[in-house]
Length: 303
Image (tube, rainbow, N blue to C red; front, side, top):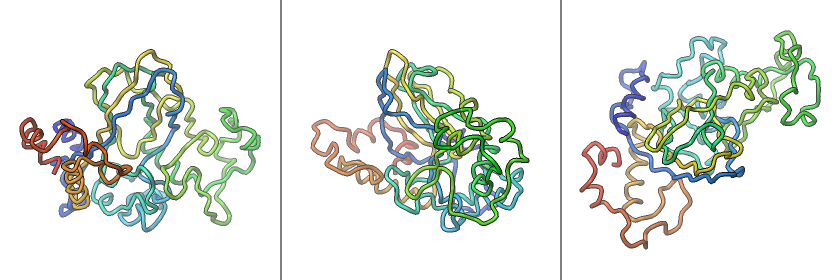
């Protein structure tokens, strides 16, 4: 897993040679095991992007690292999603949202624990990537001159927009800037749908990952729009371990130190709900078990 993370993060680079980040020393973020049973429709995450929402437009959020400046100045073609130095300073959780990740993730990832195929409770991603990022960041500044139907009436309807209403001539800059940012609220991730972001054509551009087997690792860039099947139509469980790829940064090192302390105590890490966890379990994993079985690189990744 560490070698896989090193390979993935090698796609990134930094324009600042003094940036305090190392993609060759991954850190391990202790996440959750998700088990989704056949027929489940409760864990239906629609298209979204993690890592905050309105923080992407705020000076005190991603603006601290000037991550999306190229897009906002109108030169979206120059935006480099693989540049790390600006992202180090970005703040993705100004509003202390539940379930936010305190560590710096370059990739989100799943380690499969089951055989899972399309429509069986698995992952969908949007391959447009840079185009999609530029679109949803600039979307709040544009409004349609006319809409064919009420957005409330058309909720969930893929035909809410016609070819004519999607035409560039039907869209114009807002005359006066408002605080309306489609799919973004304090303390939440960035949500996307066909009504708010019609040009992305999400009903047709969200594609399933290939069939996966136990031990397969699926990773996606931290800016990628992703979702999970609305309904698990398979016959077996869809189970994954969440394992993101995290480089070494000062803030992430601080988190890993606390995470290590929590592991020794047998309680959940600080990003997750509290409680006694496994602290009273007999035979739970302890530091001695890690030292006996884990490599030096693994121990370093765990702090």
